[in-house]
Length: 430
Image 1 (cartoon, rainbow, N blue to C red):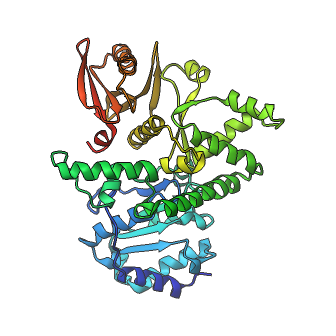
Image 2: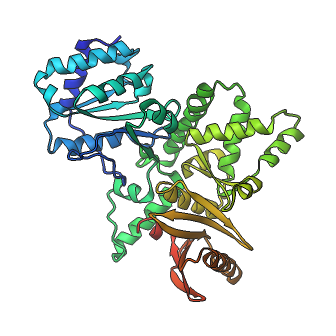
Image 3: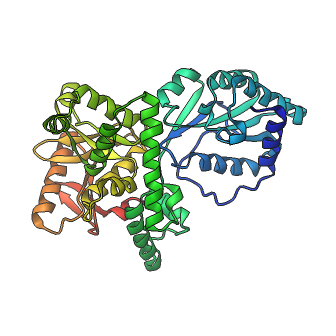
């Protein structure tokens, strides 16, 4: 049980601690110290995606200009705080102002990590937001802190950020690789790092781990997602089917996802799983940030009638779940492109005309069309990709589009419209 003395110790210990080995993520978290609009900042996302270290980065930034006593960090996964109750949280506030009574009239920055471990935490957050002169930052596991629930619990007081594993650009930053596409040495290092990124994925903990260790770490993450974020949260009992479904999704990333096919596969094996159950389990996996689905562009009727495409939160999980000795690099490329787009926009579609285009979305108000093809060395492959993009550009009246490849880089004129052909490693850093 937490006490005032314990809270005081945790507050002071962290304020005396030097936060090291933290690098800036490529995400602009509101607010800065000088913002006039005050919102509770909520960070949510898949497990181990780096939410805590984003808090550390914010704290380091604040420490440059703000009295360290005005910055308080509490991690509610600290075993010394188990179990913490709503009453204990009230004692936390009393403990802080007993330490620093003069701070009552100053803006204080509260950072609460994994606060969902405290039952009815939202009542406490709402109260101090309304009554204290403060800025509040919270993180939570996707198992118990979903964006919709945050919006409901905090009723307009919050702004929520989704945190993903590292992008390739962040991966380079974490490995201290400078980006200079005019430097032969820099490009060589970038390409080598991209090969590593393709193999390991972007979970921050595995950046400097060897392949065997990184595999073990990602396997543990998958178990946490399965058991904590899905089975426990939704009180499910069919562990076998959930494991099968996760394996199926990651083995078929960047592919059309057929509920009917899964249903018929199970039915043929004599296993009774309803289509509604499959839909529900996919929704649970999406809530846990494990997978994402993309509809066809069109009317609501079109989206219902056509299958969705499925993508995974990190390509490192595909290797663990798939077990293939010859992974489909083209599918991995497409998944990586999706993740970059998803960090910017939730409104992503695939386009279906005479040919299919992998992505159509609006990024910063601009229409964007993208096809992904690892190898376009054959004239037929290049012709197919270009024809698909040309048709879509005409349909949306867009003057340019992108074809993401393995190594080819050039620009093609397609009936007066431009198709930029760019290697994936380069597209990810521009």
